[in-house]
Amino acid sequence: MLAYDRYPGEGPLAVLLHGWACSGEDLRPLALELAGRHDVVVPGLPGHPRTGAALGPAYGVGAMARCVLDLVRALDRGPALLVGHSLGGAVALAAARLEPALVTRVVTVETSWAWVEAAIGPIDLADAERRSAKVNMKREQLGLSSVTGQLDPAAMAEALSSVLEWSREPSRDSPLHGLGIFGDPGWAAVSSSGVPGTREGGVRRAHLAGCGHWPHVERPAAVAQLIAATGGDEKH
Image (cartoon, rainbow, N blue to C red; front, top):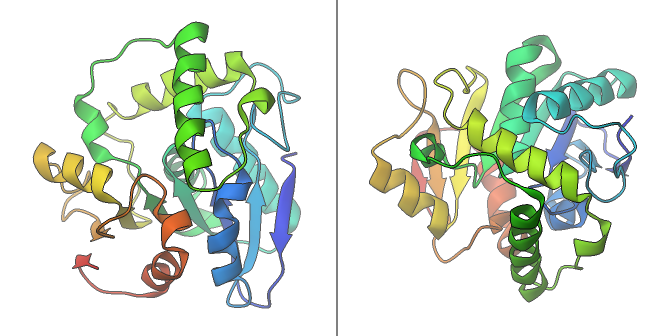
């Protein structure tokens, strides 16, 4: 079972999933915005802080998705809105494809569809450690705590290799994918790739101008408003 933080509310269940080499701390500002309207749960993904490496050697997107679905079942408050940042968005989409009855909707944050064109092979331990150090340097610039010493290197390598492989799968999206939110890095990549979505009609997209890879940290109220809203593509 995934360890998690909870922000109780009378509304429907919302499960927020952090990104690669990150932690649930990243999603606390957004959780506080959503709490009340939702019963918010923020788990630590396998190999990451809170849950750690206790779940065995499988840290791919599919394995993580099954852990999230097990958590939704155990909480007995589902089906759940799944909101995922970066890797967490891939995990959320995989969970929605595996068991759509347990998911109401998926919102991704900086999960870039442009990765479909990336030609990157398996990530080794040294590369994973370099990349995770870079991620945490950027997180620290946003005032977040470093988690470098709390990450399992083998888990980081497997998870990153898996999400890059997932990003090249034509069937990786879900009909439950309602919204993709992007800061400037992801928005530029998606716009230049010419891939507005991965299913017919595309996925609603929203651009939070001036944000980096962590819009849920930089502008949590705006992200919460977008999650609550309906409609077409928006730029804010």
